[in-house]
Amino acid sequence: MALRCGIVGLPNVGKSTLFNALTESQNAEASNYPFCTIEPNVGTIIVPDERVDELVKIFNPKKIVPSTIEFVDIAGLVKGASKGEGLGNQFLSHIREVEVIIHIVRCFDDDNIIHVSNQVNPADDIEIIETELILKDLDTIEKRFEKSGKSLRVGDKRVQREVELLNGLKEHFATGRLAKYYTENLSPEDKQIMREMQLLTDKPIIYVANVNEDQVNGNEYTKIVEAIAQKEGAKFLILSVKIESEIAALETIEERNEFLTDLGLKESGLYRLIKESYAQLGLITFFTAGEKEVHAWTLDKGLKAPQSAGKIHTDFEKGFIRAEVIKYKDMLQYKSEAAVKEKGLMRVEGKDYIVEDGDIMLFRFNV
Image 1 (cartoon, one colour):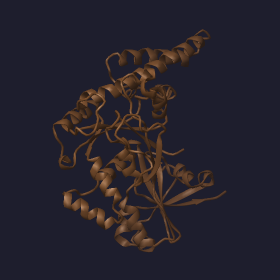
Image 2 (cartoon, helix red, strand yellow):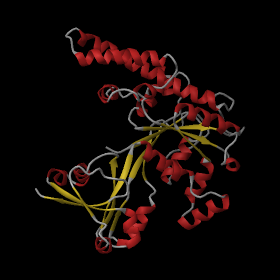
Image 3 (spheres, one colour):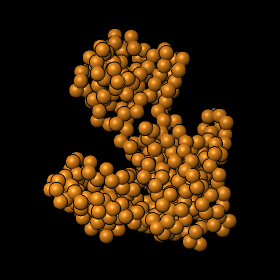
Image 4 (tube, one colour):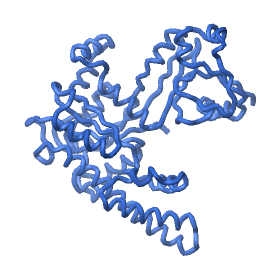
């Protein structure tokens, strides 16, 4: 299953335009009216990683396979979405299918672009979206209560614990806080119970402040969003969707870099967003590299060598013998596997080795 990030926000905050820029396409219609996007647009995005580029220079492979991540453009939510307003139930179900929520917040004034509340107010906008998500989660746990209540009669201890957690979560929601701030301190067993409920507010959030072209360093609106992100312990980025759209329309990397330089930017906001989304999913990248192929493999942080081998093929995990590991920095310095070996820097690791970000792996197995 692909890793998914959902782009949410009120109508007309720049979601579809951002999605178009991300996918370097015009598949998502970006128009100046609410509910332009009805079905979610899905785009597979390459994760920017300069290490892939450097490995390609070293090995000159016939094939290159970078890491990817999916972005889903979810239609604009409005007040009352949890009760079906503005096709809300349909849109909220799309959010349930993503792992990270990217919350786009309008932080610019423009009389030519309609705001559903007729005024730009980032704090209110964020509250509307998150209140609707909480209300939908409350509906979910009420239905779960009904189901769990029947099982309680047979004395199921797990169900009993589930009911205790649901009661605690209900009290937590009464404070206006998202579910993730309730679940983060639970035991692994309790977290698993909560994960089964697929709560909308139990997902990591990245707040993205969308600004005008001349305000990429922030404004009074972005300060409000940043303060909310800090309070919530969430990630925060500022970008101009309009600028990102213009960058995406340029044909070559050289043109894009020149455009960024002219604006005084080191990298595009989209690159920062993609990399931050990848990190929020708790992922790392390991590589297999040679003349045939340079391949970036996505892995959950903390997994061991056999599980990493299983990402390539299940037989690799079943018959795992050992892993030969080269650190990316060593490969970058010495430019070949033979040179790294000669320096004694290739490590042989067993089943308990925890793979690190950037490891270049060769698996030995027997089936």
